[in-house]
Length: 369
Image (cartoon, rainbow, N blue to C red):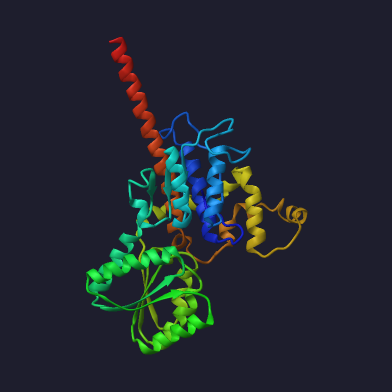
């Protein structure tokens, strides 16, 4: 499950796709990993919607001719595992279904603490730390600097509620007081309440939690107007994408963002070589759709094909025309986790095959010994 979110596209989702296909290509070309086995893949978009995620996973399990539980009409190819999803809200329902069939699932972005419960999710793994680790680090940071009076903004969903409770428990364990906690909603009434809170409660440290939302920008702007020399602390879920660009633009806020990752892997330039997409015919239509959407080109299907059919520059150099003056590496921390997830899945399959071969050899020796 690779979140492409074509209905509301993002450059970061494109990078996820790019690193996913790069990993598949590199593994298939490596004679030391899965010899005599070629990895294939199916891409499904969850739309960041749990019901769509469930529909997609049933489609993967059933085959192309209908979603029929406990029945597969696939003529060839064997499902060995699922990569994804990016968010906890879609990863959890996928895990609940895949767990029935004991399929391995590796998420590259889901941080919900419940996924660490081996009794509930014995086949789910992640290339990202869970929420408890994130907020434990934030709590230790706050304690280290002696900030004993903090405010909390959290997203208006289950993710925000769950992370809020984790953060409050950890802060209380360190005797750090919560000056206020506010839900991020879109209404003039809640914004008036937010201004009223800021005017009455002086607090220079604000912690964000829950899922990233652009609605937080209005709250952060008001926060910056009431105080000077504010401190904004962002967990990893808020440090990628648009929020990473927006927060430095807000006056009078010093932002501290947590990101758990080894930057050494970003030195591998091959991870961001989008020329490989030209070698996959099934991605041609996708790239055309991305170009049309990103550049707000409105045309008919035929008109679009005429415009881009012979223009290989757009298909083979999409990165060079997107953020051409910025360092691409600063945007790729999340997408590299996709690459690591695919590698981990392949290495696991490789070890399993080696174990089976060794087991069969030993049985043969025992029978013929």
